[in-house]
Image (cartoon, rainbow, N blue to C red; front, top):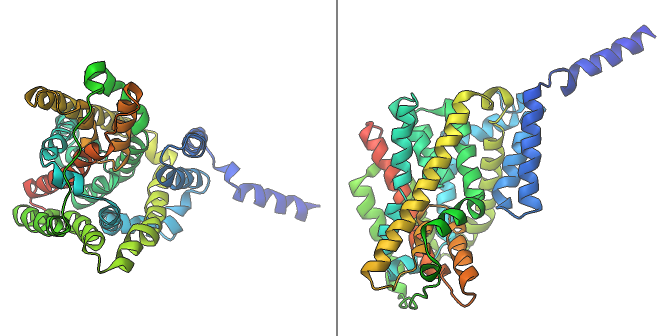
Length: 375
């Protein structure tokens, strides 16, 4: 009987119940809530499912993210900026840059949405973060998870990379919840109902030259952006050249989904209760939300100004798509516009600022790196 008792005692001691804290239980509940949003509500399941499941596992078995654990090696690929760069290549391979080429004014809307990044930067400084940590945190405002991870790694902020990444990807997933109230509060029914003229056709030559020219110009001005901008434009060149269909399909499908699994689960696994439930993390999450809201508002307000200057030819709603969440933010612009007029199609118009926002966030990240002397 003593043998059986000792065996049972050892089994209990080795189980997760013996070490589980209240904090772990809270994080497990949060993980289940994220899974509910992803599966039942359809909020970006490709992001939320792996993130939430990584969050679930690490709060049951913490060693999975420690050295020697499975997710430890996944996370190293984040730290080395490999996975974020590959994500950018996949995004480029999936995205049509035609709306941005057809309407270059979209660059202004993408630039305006970066205002949230700088608002968060000064807010983080005010909260006591050092300048590098503040820069890494502020990129959350661009709603761009890969760039957030990339910059945090390059600035040596791996200790807060987990909260930054989770906040960035969470806000990307919650775009349909966060943005519409801001968009509606800052626009009138008449403005939301504006129908924009059809975009001009973009030639194949323009689409081929665009990624080459952007890569050269941006990399010459800010060489530190080359890993992100270069991979984004390489993926798009795969798409538009028409001669490497296999590479385009691999980058936008199989490789993209493999990278999302590795990145999502490893990011989720950084949210152990010990690492996540603290004042620093709460500040990061709050700053990220503020930055995202400011970026959305800045894009809409510039859209209103452009609406006035063009005599009512631009629907201000497309300004909200200036954040980098591609193509979620553009879809939200379409959805809010269609609520006022079901015959109003803003999606392609909103894709211009959306793509510009991706480029803009990468440029801001490169600017921070240049300021801090990172090569």
